[in-house]
Every structure is written in structure tokens, then in C-alpha cells.
Length: 231
Ligand SMILES: C[S@@+](CC[C@H](N)C(=O)[O-])C[C@H]1O[C@@H](n2cnc3c(N)ncnc32)[C@H](O)[C@@H]1O
Image (cartoon, rainbow, N blue to C red):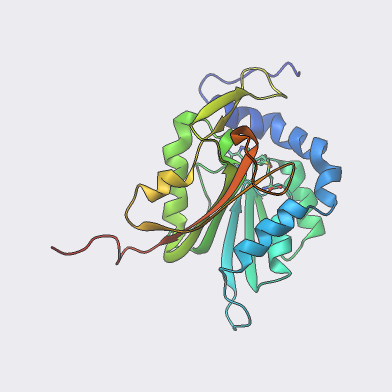
């Protein structure tokens, strides 16, 4: 544990990740991130199926919580994309910028996205929502909705428990991993509809009976025209 002193003005988890834990997470996982990952490959493959292939226009894809951009790089090898990523870790972003110069990576957090309204064809939460302060969660949803164009796809990769739950975060005292079905926050809005939900696990790469081990990829479609039926 470090002697990190939180700024009481800032939401705790964001502050810790921006100042130290983003970099420390990256350092702890640097080797694993460089190796091939069947889970990552299967998620990228499923996401790719929902993007056009072989056309002349590249899809604009944003991964939030991108780390060094390995997911985006995998997607860019099978689909024509302009990949952008944002992560609080300066070290992950510098490393990714050197390794994957075709991606546009920047340091930042999910609650304040430096992208224009409707600028993204796909917004992908890359396993980071469980780390967001609860006080920022609705702002994070609003930011993703703001930057995703009408007709675009919203992708959530995160834990998939049966009911919302929290667990102490292993690496920093006072922080929590918050597990819930985050896609529900978007699907509560009639502009979003479910395209696909794929449930798997970190460890076995297949669906598991243990809800605490479950990880889901959920893909939602945003369409304002279909949202409200005239009556
Ligand atoms: C479990 S890692 C996933 C990294 C990568 N997407 C992947 O799938 O390998 C979670 C990432 O979320 C980032 N993160 C933590 N808090 C965040 C926030 N508030 N906004 C955006 N990213 C955040 C961390 O720095 C870390 O890189």
C-alpha cells in the first residue's frame, strides 16, 4: 500500500487512478498485456462482427479505460477503424503511443471526454466502469451518450454479477470494485436497444456458474428515431 493522500475535493477513485493507481495497474499487468489473451481475442472478434468491413470509410471507435490500447490495436488488425483511447495512466498511454502509433491515445477519465458531440461510431467501455466513483457514474453515462452518434454502438465489457455488489479493491485501501450490469444504465433509455450479450469469465474463457467470476460483453444500438412511438 502506498501513502497516498486523497484530495477531499476530488472523487476518491478517480483521484487515486489519475495520481498513481492507473500507472501502477499498468506496471503490474505490463507483461500479461503484451502476451496473447484468448479472452481479449474473443471479445475483439465479437465486437468486430458489428463493424463494417471492406468499405472505404473507417469507423471511429473510442475505448474508455484503454490502458495501452491493446484491444484497439487488435480491432484495427481486423477492421478499418480510427481508434481513439483514453486512460488515466500516463505510463500506459505513452507506452501505447510508442507501440501503436496508428492509435490516438490520451490521458483522461470517463467523466470528461475530450471528444465532440456525436463524434464516435462506437464507444467501448474496456473493463473500467467497475472502478468509477459512484458519484461520477451518471456523468460517465452522459458523456458516453454525448460523444456516441445517433446510429452508433455502445459496448460495455465488465463484471456481470447477478445483483449489484462491491468488494474491497485489492491494491489500495479505501477503494472498491463495483460490480453490476452497467449496460442497464443505457438500456433504461429507450434510445438504446440490446444487440448482443455474451457472458464469459476471466479464468475459464467460458460461461461460469459462479456469478462473481462472470464477465460480460454487452453491445447496444443507439437510435433516436426508434425511441418513441407516436401515439
Ligand atoms: C482492468 S483495466 C482494463 C484495461 C484495458 N481496457 C483492457 O481490457 O486490457 C482498467 C483500466 O481502466 C482505467 N481506469 C480506471 N479508472 C478510470 C476512469 N475513471 N476513467 C477511465 N479509465 C479508468 C485504468 O487505468 C485501467 O487501465
